[in-house]
Length: 182
Image (cartoon, rainbow, N blue to C red; front, side):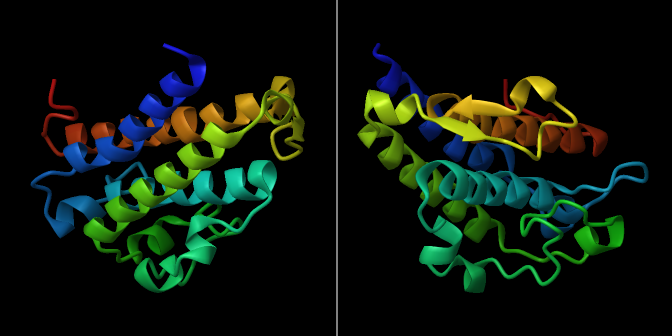
């Protein structure tokens, strides 16, 4: 399978998978925060796709995000969005006040995945090789002070997203549920 087709298949999966992970969960379960962990399932999902959307559109594609260009601010209203606009820096009580419709979060995840997939499918080899500076990583992850566009896309659209989907499974496990269906 050629690399672009493989990337597309992965993008489709990681933007569909949360549907499977949240099946049957109540609003209380989606918003539950364990005593020693600030996050909740709804926050982890919202953050994963909001950050992917903003970071990739701003740094890689240089185009308006799905959130900004398709009216998602009204569909996913978060009054306190943190220092980054996608939840970084929020305190436990701020995360606890986030009230989002899970259907809208899942629809947003798919919309972000479709847009990212469309952009990656049209990237030329020269565009894919362009360097993207990542100054916000330099102090914590010195080896990630820059990456090519071809590296940044799967890093955020697959790596970062899957990290937070693992967090969703962790939170489900803390509630006594099976994290993934396998």
